[in-house]
Amino acid sequence: MSSIQKKTDVILIGAGIMSATLGALLKELAPEWEIRVFEKLASPGEESSNEWNNAGTGHAALCELNYTTEKPDGTIDISKAIKINEQFQLSRQFWSYLVSSNLIRNPQDFIMPIPHMSLVQGESNVSFLKKRFEALSNNPLFQGMEYSEDPEKLKEWIPLIMEGRTSSEPMAATKIDSGTDVNFGALTRMLFDHLKSHNVEVHYKHMVKDIKRGSDGSWKLKVRNIDTGSVEEHTAKFVFIGGGGGSLPLLQKTGIPESKHIGGFPVSGLFMVCNNPEVVEQHHAKVYGKAKVGAPPMSVPHLDTRYIDNKKTLLFGPFAGFSPKFLKTGSNLDLIRSVKPNNLLTMLAAGVKEMALTKYLIQQVLLSNEKRMEELREFIPNAKSEDWEIVVAGQRVQVIKDTDAGKGTLQFGTEVISASDGSIAALLGASPGASTAVHVMLEVLQKCFPQHMKEWEPKIKEMIPSYGVSLVDQPELLQEIHHSTAKTLGLSEKELVHS
Image (cartoon, rainbow, N blue to C red; front, side):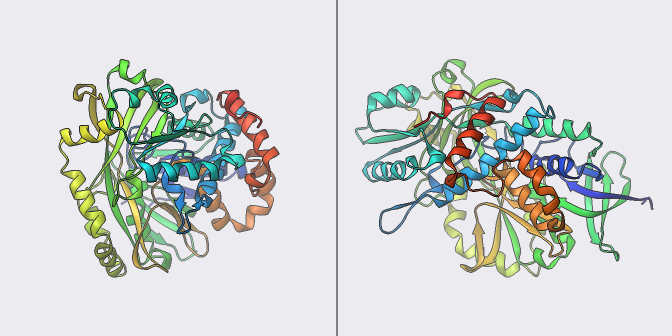
């Protein structure tokens, strides 16, 4: 091993959307800081951030039914939907700042306007959707949402889904035109081009093997060059572990107390992709249904219009699956190796609690192509097998930790885990992930650089005007931001009509 020690201010592990976002924020806030990035693959955005590996929805809670729950008294709790929508607004503002500052160009290569819809059938689901619509449509964040139970209206909105439907069950849908489709793979690549042109050193095919605390409080990383096999030591005052599913094993190596009693449960997924342009042309929306009883929240079926490589395509899924790998390019031993004496009980408790989930995943793995086609036909009655093929999505690692709800609770969401002194932080978890990257990275800044936040605040507010403000309480500011970001990002101006 070479004994050369290379010192830098900040090390980002993993070249995905999270590291790209944090790097871009830090470049604006502390341009003089030296930043180094290590990525084990040959290019950025190849794992969870890749456009074929994630749902690519600008998750703004416009159509995802699992973000609005029905309370025992029958009213709808929309607090989570509001939170996620506000978080997505931060992303829109930051992207808009980057475009208007000419730091990234051609926003149409990563964001496109697309209606977001929720679709349900059956009397109780229709009644739920109607109540959800009434609760959301009064809120400024969800302005412009429409609701219909009229089959003729639904045919107009979603001809492909309505054609050939024989069931007499009632159906209902909501539609909102201010939704977007975001290509996080393309955005990640753009952000890394920007970072490289601003003196950020990005090392591809470099794998972080170990992380240890130095006596001076800095972090020492052993990094292996995959091509040559040589190992170098790099030290930094601050390290961010943004390696997707690969973050947990690295976090465990740090030995910080916060890394104990945390496990990870890998979930893989499949999507069906339509390869018939005639079918693709008949659908223009992201349509989310309701998860089947017993299914986990990440398995809500949806039929999405996506723009990938500037070409319109249709994806249906996800079908959940199980693989012990923590990354698509990971090892089959990842899950076993992540079990440590300090998280063994946490993992076992989750295993007992989540028997139903495990059973569900095994059933999904065993689905035949014909069975998948049957599920697709619940959405598109006339779907033909020859028009659809299977794509393997990215690996997600859901966090398992001890909470007030008990030992080994499975978390559905994105979590930042940081050392008490803020010198190292790791991002774990899955959806809504990428869509809320800016919010999550601002949280990293607050946790890890509290001493700088006061001096940084004016710049943050310049980039993200609603920083620290609740947009729900400021409809005028919301309106203004919505119009200006829509204009800069090339999203249609008819999006938000004054009500």
